[in-house]
Length: 283
Image (cartoon, rainbow, N blue to C red; front, side, top):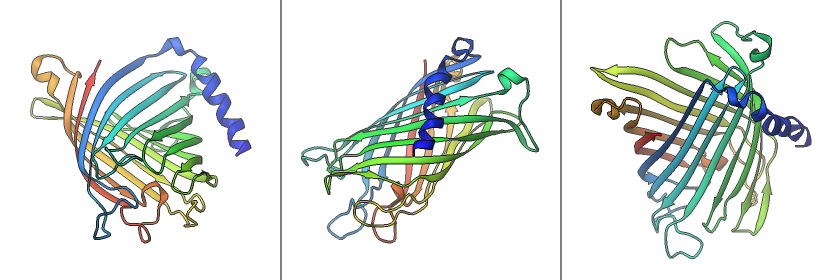
């Protein structure tokens, strides 16, 4: 963990100052998602089967980029129904989940793209995930990542893949102590591929992430490789009113295998298949 911090801290602290005022692209949006079939590990009904949870997600996303790198920030405020109660059991759980990634593009100084084959450019990415909830589990996730990111040559939009070292800490309110997971690997990919449905601009976008086993949890169970797949089809409804790229709406799907690294063969609710309604308003 010490070696990971030695790489990660300078990347996060110093990199935002590197030509931060020279952003070539910047976008901020407010979003909303809703699903009524979310699953959480160990959230079960009287029959012992996974309970369908209704969950609303309010989101703030910011992304910017320049020749020297960029920033990605996403903050979700999640609100569940009583199928996923808070620690008191009198209302649904609330959770804040933050994702930050900083990319450093050495091509900004060298004039080289560090591309090869189908890879258009290579950058360094470092970042963190941060989560707090008022559920009985009392989630206090702190996850650090660092590694290379590859941008692939596509005709329109983008396709990126990051290969990362990952270290996670959390808190288990059920047993009343912190969890210090093993250093592991991760692969995070994202894409946005624009096209048209007739005259209406549309975009197929999303992410596919894998996180390796991270040791044993505080219940003594071994963790498993985690898969999170979230594609969505979004339509530029703002274009219908003459305000292109302002209001996007569509549908998404989320598949989560071994959710949070929990072994689905042991714990019900560790596999999720959920359809979502999604909305994003760009400021």
